[in-house]
Image (tube, rainbow, N blue to C red):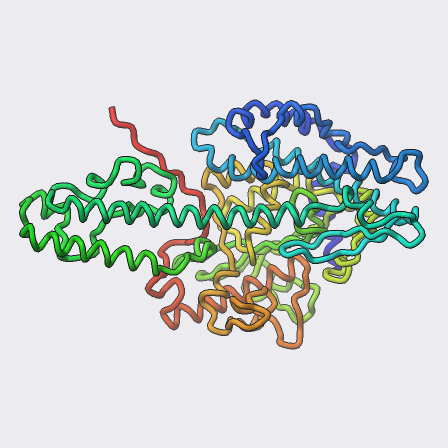
Length: 545
């Protein structure tokens, strides 16, 4: 990684080392009134006390412990400090978790900016650092040991009473990390809500069909007119706007279409109409009930005309964007159809010597740091995974990304210039939302297009076959890149931003070339024209004067 330091020296963000302006954190609280107008409850369905949010000192820290309290042997007991900090974090993160959905569904734009969630996430990261050091203090004082344990969807640190401490595990119940409990409960609630929505949609369909059957004598009455007023139509609802599919029984040729009815209201004899209407209702209902569930990542698939893209990959010291720091960013460009710019050099040297630049150009690698508290706690897993030792990532050479407005502005410009590609792009997107000033606003306004190679692997790569460990097929970047000839079989994904970006773009280009030759994927029956990818589209009703 000899070139890493060179890129950091080229990074225009170095002037931040002379002082960080954190006034924006306090200024962000000026928008609390906008959020309070719309957002009354948090992700766990609890009432939000916005006065409490307003009272938080986002600039100087929201935890109860001082720097001295983090040291072993401090006067205030570590148990009480840790309990208080965890309660603050749980309360704050339940608010942050709801803010993205509220912001995106604020169609009337009552909320002008996304500064407040970014500010709360900034403070939450520092609070998490403090919580980690309080746990470390308890270990140093011989009160407990800490092990990382998998709890369904997440891995959490679990405290166990140390031998000779005089404590039991029950004594530590109120200082255990509740993240798994909270996350898993939210996931189950989302699942139940989805099932309830599907059941409601099915009931509305059946209500339409039953109403049609009951009122079949009225040829003029279409499905929406004949059903009960409180359940007859999805028109005007969010689902109607998103899916664009009003419930119309137009797939049966025996049923007159709108044009037929306008020409001749008795286009179909009444008895024949009765029979066909009933059969059509049963047919559509059965087909709707048997339809497979949509794969939600399909919206991130590329289209037939995709060309110039920027690939990007982030390395972080954790998985939650409101707790973890961005420590490594790699991005480069590649054209999927047209030739690469000939005036640019093609001899970039990656961390892996056998990686050739190929069609890639304008490669960049930037390294960022963590707070002194996060560096003190360290992260052995990240060292093993990436080779990055965050205990060494402090000082002027490693600015913090969330304190670096120039780096954020530069990245935002690139993210809005052309589609960006990532593997499991929702990860990068979630970090951009809470780290890059202006990104959420640009995304909401339709200026960001996201393409994900993960659904390409799952849906268009016949080598991605289900197995015991991977019920949907092995769609990791490592497996996908190997199947597409972008990574040697005897090698492994590097887990560095630029290297992973490179093999991802190579795999994508190889894959698209093959799909086009075989008339599959974007060129198949279900393929999209244009660039494709995920982009917010604003549906606005036209005013009628």
